[in-house]
Length: 45
Image 1 (cartoon, helix red, strand yellow):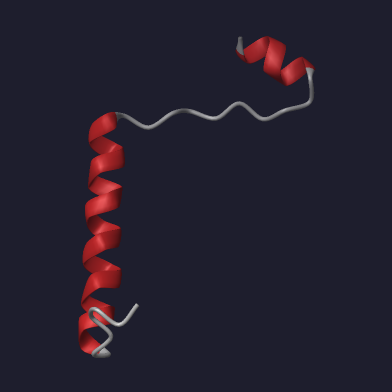
Image 2 (cartoon, rainbow, N blue to C red; image 1 turned 180 degrees about the vertical axis):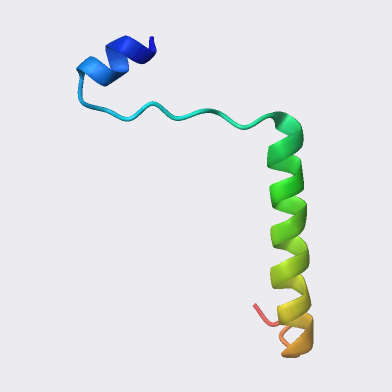
């Protein structure tokens, strides 16, 4: 599959594990959530 993708001129991408995706989402929620709380924007959709 990688060879076929490369032949089409595309760059193959490694898919992260489920644990990696969960860790990324948790880190993003903490990062942006703390900023939202710090700025007092919580619940201000």
